[in-house]
Image (cartoon, rainbow, N blue to C red; front, side, top):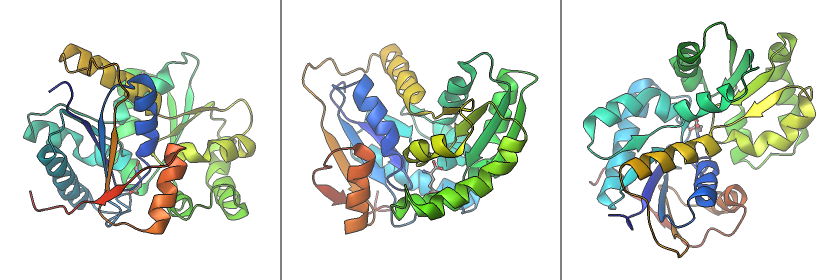
Length: 268
Ligand code: DGL
């Protein structure tokens, strides 16, 4: 089981930001990544639909023999994590607890802005998790549904993206946030432009690195870490293949992605 891959899933290729952090921290691990590009975005769908898709994603990964699963999608974590953990025997981790931990690593964090899909903001999962961990925080949550389509369109350093970001962030900046939680696995790609748009004192936080650390301690506790000295392999599956997705995959991974295979869900 140690050599079995870790399974990751996201609605698209955004979850590869988490994969990159895991590859840095746990280079020996084999990784199998599923992006449900045929049904992207999850962020604007109902909780029932997100749960249904998440079950299909998990069943696909289990059918491929993974040893643990990371939900590399905030929207799916927000709506489906507890139900998935109850349904399946395999260890399943989400990105919200690690994200909250990343925010609270700076004890001076007090006024927290959260940007995410509509689904994640409406679930209140981050707001609750933060409030449970620390009293007295001032939390401002802002749904930013236009950002994922802009990123998927590869409009990262683009005047339209900058204008949309300014519009979304103005109310948060006006409220004096000291921290901005990037509560969507696509958003780390926007960090360079966010740094230009936001006042320099606002700290940007995403959950990729802390998620990799959570995964390491979970695997350690379960004696599931891969002891190999060789570098792990990455296998990529998407439910819809296109030139654009392949190009985006390279961008998220910051290197060529190798062969991408098409996954058919619902057959397990
Ligand atoms: N990757 C998803 C997340 O972290 C956003 C993309 C989507 O809406 O499907 O919430």
